[in-house]
Amino acid sequence: MNTLVIGSGAREHAIVWSLSRGPDYCSGKPPRERLFVAPGNAGTHELATNLPLDPGNPAAIVAACRELGIELVIVGPETSLAAGLVDALGAAGIPAFGPPASAARLESSKAFARSFSDRARIPSAQTRNFSSARELRRFLDELGGRRIVLKKSGLAAGKGVFESDDPAELFSFGRAVLESDELLAEEYLVGSELSVFALCDGSDHLLLPACADHKKAGAGDSGPNTGGMGAFCPVPTSDPALMARIEREIIEPSFVAMEREGLRYRGVLFFGVMVTAQGPKLLEYNVRFGDPETQSLLPLLDSSLMELCHGVARGRLCSLRPSFSKDLAIGVVVAAPGYPGSYPKDIPVEIDEFGAQGMIFHASTYRDAMGRIRTGGGRSFTAVGMAGNWKDASDSAYALAKAIRFEGAWFRPDIGEKLLNRLNPGVGSGTQ
Ligand code: AMP
Ligand code: GLY
Image 1 (cartoon, protein in one colour):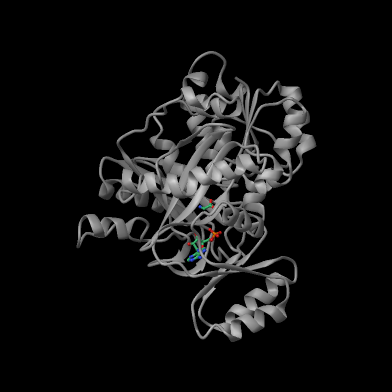
Image 2 (tube, rainbow, N blue to C red):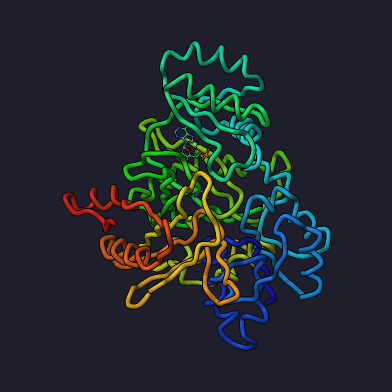
């Protein structure tokens, strides 16, 4: 089947890699003639045909789909979904994995998502919306040093969230957001975070193994929020009883409310969940696969990703039972100097993978005229280790992360470490 994946991140490299291993691309014409990525990166170039298209330009993508006879489009980034790509594909009769813009608002407007989840009576943090700095000032004056979380309502690549107990810091962040967007203030929730993915074909849904992300830039969850500095899958604490409770209290009510409110959805809905002492609470919805979670999740998928995406896009999910390896996966993001602040691009990269077990997924990299790989983004690579136990998976992931060399490259040294310490007190994961 001719397939187009939209995006250029490590998530999209992992999707292309997983598709290219499936039965659809293991025989017949070479995958490069049937598997396309727009715009892709230096990693996807090894597996598929990169198309120099703007993922935010639905008309250009529809035209390319017609020309290439594309039968399925899998949309990675939320920006393309919010820009109405799936609506444009639908109007052209091209099946897509991803929601239309009306449902993508569950991610592109946190204000909409929170009022939706409140209408659906889903447990979440107490929230207040602000549209002026004066209201915010009055609220902060009455806060009395309580820790809260401020959020920009619109898309912000994981960087529109700020938590603090300092009213001056909070005001300065909030005022800057209010210059261009709505602002939400949330009760600060304490607990452990889970990323839960539900595939949805418009009527049925299917849960994938839970993942854990590491949102903060620094070791020990210090420093600013990022898009995610590493993840692991599956999560040992996400036992069947917890997952059943999350499904009953968060996931099912979300799908029931979507149906009631006419939000048609064929794709993956990502539930950011905080497991608190009072039970699981919804932090946010995302309307696509997580990054970096996908890079740890898909290497564990034993069955065909193509079959799953096809089932979602054509409303035939109920007959599918995906199988997953018993292995465990840890993904470590290797970032450019300065990320999540401003960072240089076009830095030459050397990769010495010799002997290391696992995968390296590229994000926004490209090859220069000399054939040398160069960086193009902030979170430049995800190094993924897989093994039958956490220690070996972590050692492989860190061996690969260290094999990626460019000036100023850095990674969090403690991805999965809390988990490892809980399983084997006294044993740390690989560090720099
Ligand atoms: P969001 O984009 O809403 O998921 O927020 C990004 C990250 O900020 C989450 O993954 C959490 O780590 C953290 N966060 C968001 N909301 C809260 C909250 N109410 N309490 C504690 N942490 C939060
Ligand atoms: N890893 C969280 C996200 O994809 O937004």
